[in-house]
Image: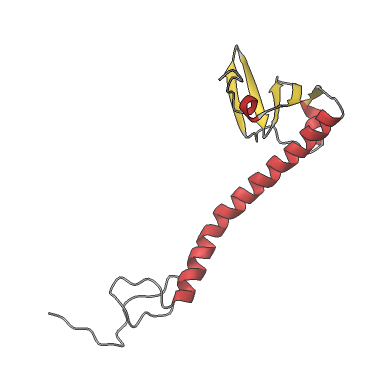
Length: 135
């Protein structure tokens, strides 16, 4: 059986690079602080992507909501893009009868190559998820 000395190096900390001199053999961090810092940094990129997508969806929603309030039912994509709308971000979509229905939270619309049309706020949660009111 091989015994290791207490001060013998067992690898390097993944966060700070300092030698790990104690603890179990497969240890990856020299301290709890380094472990927390490493995991926080590792998850930061994912949190940033989710935050950017959420912000873009919120911007799309604000633009669509303003169009609904002004009773605009159709608008060309060029004008919409100039307002900051990102046509590639939606909360859901479904295909039926050759058309694709797009949703941005509780606002639905259809899209052609050059326009979005039939912009309207859905009146109920059941309508938003496509469940018949008769159920």
